[in-house]
Image (cartoon, rainbow, N blue to C red):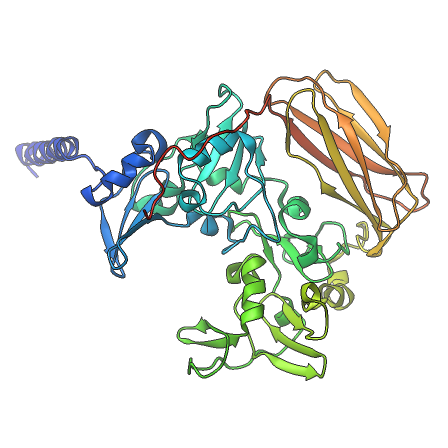
Length: 472
């Protein structure tokens, strides 16, 4: 090819790039007029971030992403709202505040109020989470996520880049490291954080320590479920499909006839099964169908006092004669899994996680103001049974390399004990590591380790919402 042709082609490409750049500069993405009023009422670019997509339409509704949120307008009901991206991030959908009650972290409450409260933010999905890698604390809500850096002055709080996470490559927006979502999967506590994230009424007591399953992933057995480390989930954990693993037969999904009582849940296209209203309500209280799985068979009568329906990851029993809070309960499939499957996974030269004493941290505040007390409670089990009258020790490592050891009161009949720790007056963002071990027992016991973060003083919260709430 002659040189002048090559130079000509390069010149055309260069001019094209310059023209495209000029076009982008002359036509930046802006918040569409239909969203502009609500966008500004919720704090505009300073709070919700810049627009990162053009407006688009889907199923009759209009959408537009900012870096922090997904804004939605439904013309049929003339309502503006923020999409619940947090459910997808945590992979625990329709998570209600009760029975897993999470309080709004006090430092986040002023911004939560400014945004109009739950009508804008959605329900709280997590306790405050310590992100050591980024030296920040975060808390996830349905529609937004809050974070605060260790370097932030008191009272300065930001929103996570929910919108950038959801829109991903389609928007071409690169979220700053400090506000990105990616680090939730870096919550290396993983399965170890399960007691703080999942209600023990739902999981049942732990029946094993954490160990490596046949697929190379960490897992832990509870009475009702088996939790494993799921790296594909931003939440970092998922449930093993116990009905399939224990050969509980699945039925052929049926057509939605609208003739049966309950809620129809599709599992294969338009086919699925009806779930009774009370079971459906239970599932929506305990993490939703994305976590528990779709139904795999019909709701059936086992005997006069017992009905049952199985889902991809567990089975639910319904006992009409029990008290109201005991009518619905997960079937103890974790016990059966432990008996017939899990022992095959244990390395011959490894420690058997099913015998001896199991220690589980039941309660700890992940962040504590400097100089305040930290409360730690522990559950001790032996082969899944509460172990009483054993003494546990707590060793705390402070940042000045000093270690302090305290003894818990002997465990009670339910296997629990607790201790208040006088926290070090360390700088904001300082991690405090600790270890709990059993004292004077014959069995070999693995100690349990944890950490919390010193986070300075927490501001008081006062006042009413400062900005308009969506949907008005």
